[in-house]
Image 1 (cartoon, rainbow, N blue to C red):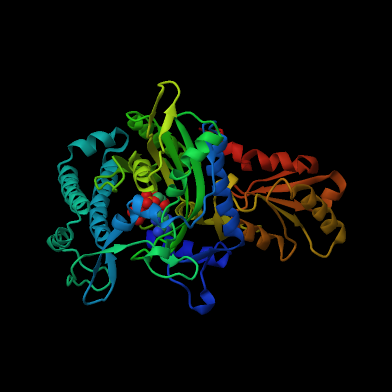
Image 2 (image 1 turned 180 degrees about the vertical axis):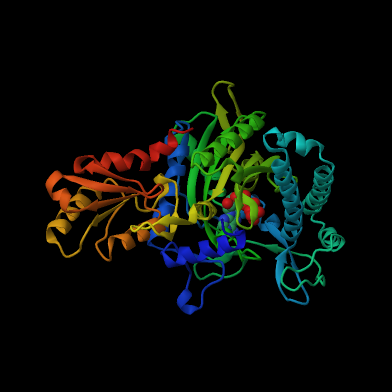
Length: 518
Ligand code: ATP
């Protein structure tokens, strides 16, 4: 296994080389933290969306979807608290002139202590072998306990300073911990300042505050301001949910981690409206459900963990992240937040309109509480690429060792499910047959026809694209109506009747193969 830095570099260059992700506006030297998805990328992205939509909307009778506009009335962002409170603390290093998010500098410091704990665990696991009890080790080892205490103290203080907007204390903490600029090693920091993350533009040709429009920094508000329209038209009773997939925009201070932190990105959010007082039950319910959604993809459980928030956003009474072990460490992939009635009550106040839900069973009206699940589509994409990309040594046709780059994506998410390959390009009897097979598959499966280059080279290309199955049409096919199906992961080849190809491929690549796992 490559070291983590190498793995990340490999993912970034693979994304470009095979048409998954391109730097936006590359022709003009690029636009920082903005990316475009290429032919394979858009397919993978669409498949992730489909998996989420099916798991959230199709699988739940009480959840419906919407697609709200990016532009909304500017008072919505005043009501939601984003105009006044959607800030990040920024800090500059005076020597390197590099800018950082002050809280992230401290979180990265915590990440290093956390890595020490992980190292201790690994060492002990090796030493004790089968007798190793991880829980007990974590609860009793003095070095681990001391480090855990350190982390709790740092996170507690940071959380308090963030909640109070105490920028001076954030800076003091950076200095006391001796945090240096990762680029220059210098500890010469400016003061910490607040920076609002919302982009704005203006409506029509009027200028000034009146016409100021914001690009939404989250999709959630489009759901809140529509919740009564949706509830009434779809005749839902509490608890019910509204789901949405859409673009969000944040003027991120630092954007150096490829598609992990972008200025334009996509969110998949679901707001679940519940009776006041029941929110913690539903919060726990959705934490568990969402983790299962991730685990059904078949990536090792150890790559995921929960991280409970000490530092709560202005709208939340409980919040946890599902973190993924990216090559640069465990980082937030999804947020699950108990948002109380903050948003709806605030919209009631700012709009002057009644947004209460009438509960027919209790015969009373009240503002529902909200539990939300919010996952970044681009971060999901990145987590899939990071865990799938592997370089393996395999035997070639002559039995010699050779390297292959393979993208072991979950089958249902793979951009191409099956490649149809005539053995030789210049034999019309093979190519015609292959085209026929391709035509019979293409409306049911994401299929690709490829006749260029030697068969081995075509296999490698499909491995790099993450295609689970390659179907080869050879001279025998003309005799026995069978093709060879090659499996991406174990390289086994099997003869299969042409009439059975669709079933054979669909069995593992259809979305329901994932959805039925939880
Ligand atoms: P972070 O702490 O990493 O800035 P956040 O806590 O601000 O993230 P949320 O507001 O909870 O993020 O947004 C929900 C999800 O949207 C995140 O879990 C993440 O997957 C995604 N997301 C947020 N900001 C970005 C971004 N700049 N680029 C890509 N995805 C993002």
